[in-house]
Image (cartoon, rainbow, N blue to C red; front, side, top):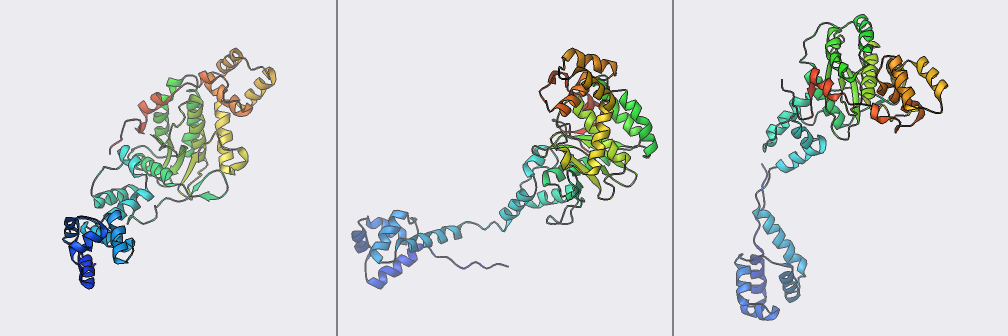
Length: 371
């Protein structure tokens, strides 16, 4: 139990100073040029010492103004009820977790009780104590080293893991997923066809969820494993474009097919379009190559570029896409990547988020998934 030393008002010390000098209150008032009433109220603790008064008392009593300001500050602080560490505990919570964003998203309920908040965060992240390390293994991305994700990314991953665990689907087998790839490829012709993705993946034993990204996290998607036979593909749909949706989806599915992330629990992919090829590891390079091939055949694209470069007329792009029975937006996406021209024919990169979230287990964009 903490003991707090008794703190006296500065007026007590002022009375002692006057008694030591044999001065009356009236004499001090005359010396500093202030009303006698002020001196009386200071000694009685009815008035606080201001900086001006501190200077006058310091000059008259030879103590300096700092003494009186310190006495006043200590006295005023002693009159304020101690917070019992509640403010410090709340500050630590805000320092560690994206509290406001998680409350805004409905992942955590707002509460004035620090105990209630701490319990909610422990439950959300699966922690034994609020200071414990979050039980999620390191993620593999960009380099051969395992980079520890930041708290924004961990919060997103934990949310995706929680809602994915609620899905009840059949067992996963690699063979079934590989057999489903042509069915998925047949959906590339129109944006509305993306609504079939959750059903097809569920039939393969792959849990598919969509979680709105936390601002600043730059997450595109993730592949993680609830158990050795329960893969999850989670997308953020951070970039609402048909080409990005199919590229990221196929990228994550390749991770699943190859069992990537099983050792550390998951693979987290962020800013797939903005990461230079020489800054990604072998697993990511393989997933990127398969995703690009899925969207537009590499041989077909090479032949098209050889025929029309450097004049990429929009009409020829559209005709090429129709010949392959895919949406022009997928061709545009691959051309942009290859040419570094991200302004090229952007109108064809149509939105698909509404189609996907209408069919998938979704958390975000105003919808809070509840268990």
